[in-house]
Image 1 (cartoon, rainbow, N blue to C red):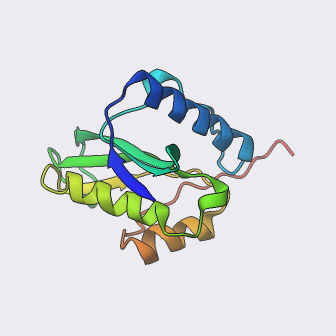
Image 2: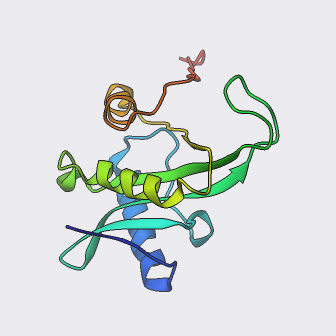
Length: 148
């Protein structure tokens, strides 16, 4: 497995769009829709096997405009927009390696790494991000439909 940071050239963008279509078809995240070119950001790190992208992570920097209970106004942050690994490549440490490489790349440019998730497999996500990647669980937004 090779890991590399890439610029957003047309071929890479098309590969990521195709992977996001597979993610949408999996139906494992609430509201997941395939990406367009405008949804994809840098920095971008990819996992490559046999010249094919099999996983990726990308995000963007921002500065907080509002104080929260854990982040002050004006804090420099990096948010993970997406982290995805093809199902047949999961449980091999690829997602963890992608995250760690991104963490190393952004650590000198921000104070916090943040992310939101809308997964249907919340126990797996909590295990991955909290137990394996040492993130802190801060809050949850829960929904119960009253239309059923």
